[in-house]
Image (cartoon, rainbow, N blue to C red; front, side, top):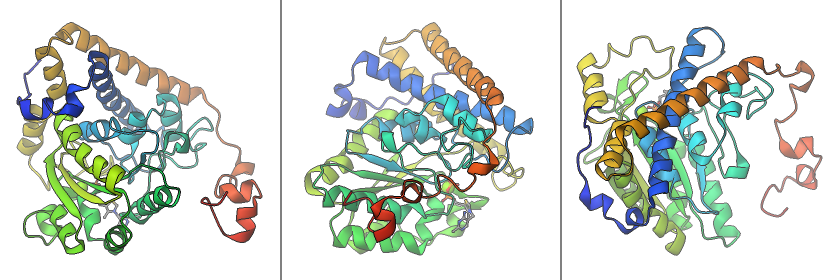
Length: 358
Ligand SMILES: Cc1ncc(C[n+]2csc(CCOP(=O)(O)OP(=O)(O)O)c2C)c(N)n1
Ligand SMILES: [Mg+2]
């Protein structure tokens, strides 16, 4: 296996990383491998015509979701855009419910009605899966508002792409986040492209995208997302700010997607070079980097790492069998599960006062 890791002793030695046990580190390796394998298997079935709609793969970006989610406590929440499989598996959603959702089956996490872009698990503080670019940014703000309103010490991590920074809703959210001192962390996963448009062709900026936070008096940071140690060490600072000061942060995390914008993006080698993709796969792959740490630290042998990876592969294959065998949703249920309050005939649905006072 190629030794891809750049040693990052500074980040590995951060207290938050020193606190990781051997088992914690293996768990992180298992998580990034599971995301990679889940998506590779889903791609195979998408290409075989088993799924409708879009499939946006997170392959290449796994360390960002895994590193950030590993910092979550009971009152921390996650919301993201349509590239949502990695965050879902990282918060603990099962491969079966996630794969069945892609197949449009009743056993899917959204009962087969949401597909790839709409994974949800409120019991795991995971609020989706949103298809409108930056549509999740005011919703993430709402999660943070809810935490403050309830007096809970928590943070809302709102993930978004580099293309989403230009949406008005994001700027309105930044204004309120600063004005109300809300514990939201906007995490820009900068993979360099918005569909086929490079960052340089879509955004006006001086230093970097996160620096726009300065206009709102919000703290910001730019970091590299390929190494889970760095992600954990630097995102932890923003978590701490949210927890102890109830203040927002904007983080810009450099990352890269290996596949096209979605599987339907057949031209993704036209707006970037083959060499660029291969360089990231060779030198910046999050799995190779974490694997290399594990081996160098004597936590896993090469054979043990391969075994974990193979287990992830088998789990993903089994999930596809589960999805294939599952039933389709019944057309009579098409209007169910749109609004929880309506389904449950709650007082909130009559009064319009939702969530906070129930
Ligand atoms: C409001 C809105 N405009 C346009 C689109 C079409 N669209 C879908 S994804 C996308 C690019 C977003 O890129 P980025 O925010 O960098 O996220 P990435 O796909 O790289 O994760 C666009 C323009 C949309 N879904 N919503
Ligand atoms: Mg992008």
